Amino acid sequence: MSSKDMSKDVLNTIKKKTGKNVSEKDIQKLASGVKPSTIQSEKQLRQLIKQVSDMVNIPVSENTVNEIISAVQKSGVNPNSMESLMKLMMNK
Image (cartoon, rainbow, N blue to C red; front, side, top):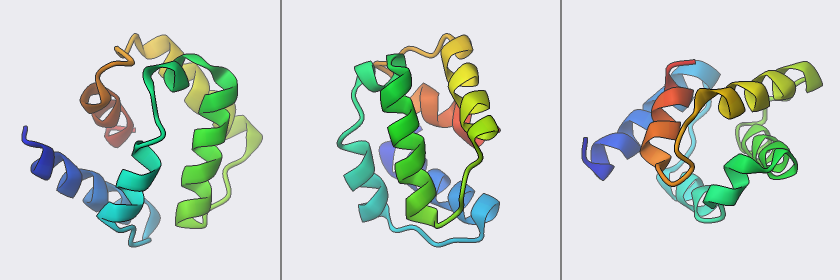
């Protein structure tokens, strides 16, 4: 899957699941701060979830945050592969 196709799929998934339009530039800005260590740190994952929640203006309960963190940690996703992480999130 090309990077362009992945970007389009991510934007379409966000719109479909949230009803919100998010620009590719917004996603790129957020993604530029994500590093492999972000996926491995619960504190950093919480911060990332909050940033995404704020971007689409949809609150996320503490219970949902905990479920997301648990799913990411249990998934065995290679933190160096953002494509596999995005596929995991798009299927939720």
